[in-house]
Amino acid sequence: MPWTKVYSNKTDFENALKDNKDLRGVTYKSAILEATYQMLESDPDVFVIGEGVDDSGGVFGTTKGLHEKFGKERVMDMPLAESGLTGVAVGAAIAGMRPILVHMRVDFIPLSMDQIINHAAKWHYMFGGKLNVPIVIRSIIGRGWGSAAQHSQSFPSLFTNIPGLKVVMPATPYDAKGLLMASVYDGNPVISIEHRWLYEHMGHVPLEPYQVPIGKGIVRRPGKDATIAAISYMVYESMLAAEALKAEGIDAEVIDLRTLKPLDMPLILNSVAKTGRLVIADTGWKETGIGSEIIARVVEDGFDSLKAPAERVNLPEVPTPASPVLEKAYYPGKNDIVAAVKRTLSRKRG
Image 1 (cartoon, rainbow, N blue to C red):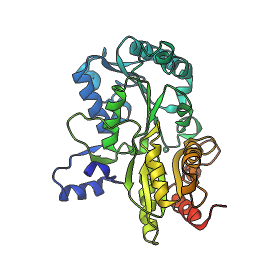
Image 2 (image 1 turned 90 degrees about the vertical axis):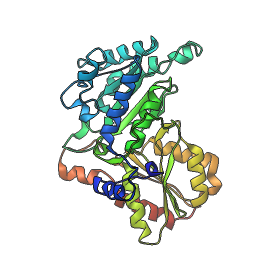
Image 3 (image 1 turned 120 degrees about the horizontal axis):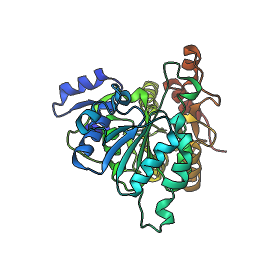
Image 4 (image 1 turned 135 degrees about the vertical axis):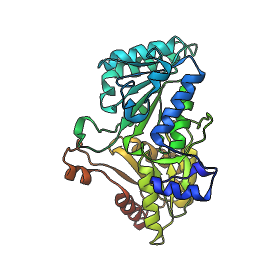
């Protein structure tokens, strides 16, 4: 299926188009915009709310022009009061609406944590399953432009620690559309985190509405020597790493996790059972990150499969620098993943 492939740039996808006329090329940001448009058009309970959703740029293009088509009652700007606007959206979800709340930068979601943790994540349980909170909170991570310590953080693991929340991180345009639609109709609060470096990536996206199942990862590249479990933008770095390793005779399997909560542990365990080695390529920090959870569960449920200690590729344990030179050194990529795979191949358990 063409949508299982990843294309690192527009040129790669345009070359694929020449061989397959059934492919429809859409950028990641346009896939989100299309999904939102189709849900607004077909379901009066869906609305978009957030800071800047009706600006001319439309949140990096993901909400561009929606307010002109559907009006400010369906696509509404909100003031810089994160906790208040989150409370409004949670209340609307409790009342039966399906809000798509856009927190443009994940750095400022902590201002809304009381609403997310103590309200959105809890009401279904506290009302004995008789009440749902079908809210999707979109937010953005990622590097670039000297965004520094307060505008480029990545902490999805903050949300994976909370019962009642689901967390998705689509890496491809196909998944960006399908997971957003699945999240809106899941019936539970979903945190959807997008990497800004993915917005211009292009891939196959069907025009018709569809859903990608929450909690299901996918093998992007089969292999037999080591498993690379990758998250969001690191899927692309992992694919580049796998190609570099292939030139040295190392056959790496790349898994796109797609969902961080719930994790697709059967997929990960099956892959590790085949390869015996595991590398986690994450967008965030190492200590108590999602990689820690994955490795712990592999040790719990698949320890006998491991031929060597697992490896993690993460950000350094310091805040993000603003300097372009330091920023370049700060972020891991293909070479770091290659080195991690080689380390685990060189080691033996015990």
